[in-house]
Image (cartoon, rainbow, N blue to C red; front, side, top):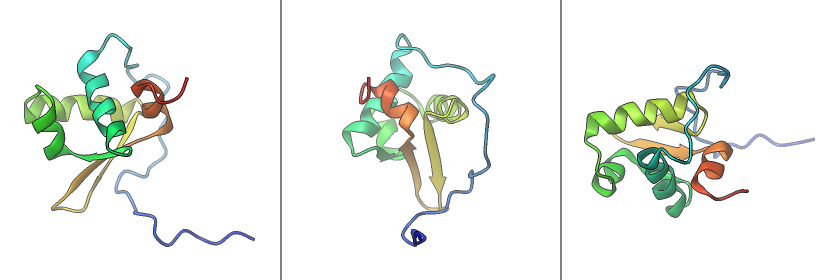
Length: 100
C-alpha cells in the first residue's frame, strides 16, 4: 500500500500531453539550454523572474521559449497567480546535461 504525497504541488497544466509532434530542442539551441541549465543549477526549480535576470532574453522571448520547452516535455510551468515556477522534468534534466 502506498500513501498519497500530500506535499505535492498541483499544477494547472497537469493534462497529459504527447511530445509526439512537439518541437525538439537540440543541443545547438543555446538559449533554451541556458534556461534549463539555470533551473538545474537551482535544484531543478527556478522562477520566471530569475530567468529574465539570468538570461539575455526579454520577458516575451522567455515566455515563448518556456512554452516550447513545456510543449516538448522539458519543463513544467506552475503558477499560483503571484509566483511562476519553472520545474525541470526528467527530459529537461537530460537536456541540461544532468543525465546521459
